[in-house]
Image (tube, rainbow, N blue to C red; front, side, top):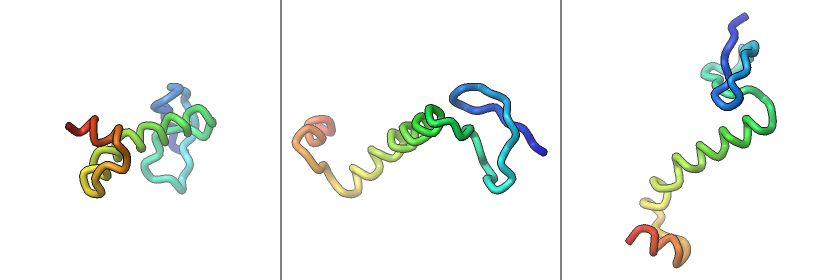
Length: 62
């Protein structure tokens, strides 16, 4: 069985064979960190496609 080091907590653990590119363990804290980073990485490209949805976002883009 393959092992991996979680990107968030740095814990060594066995990798789930069903998840090909697993980088985070299943702990709630690590999953929240994974989701936060994903949202952060996809926020600007989506905003550029759809345009600002609020006044504060339009100020950020200016």
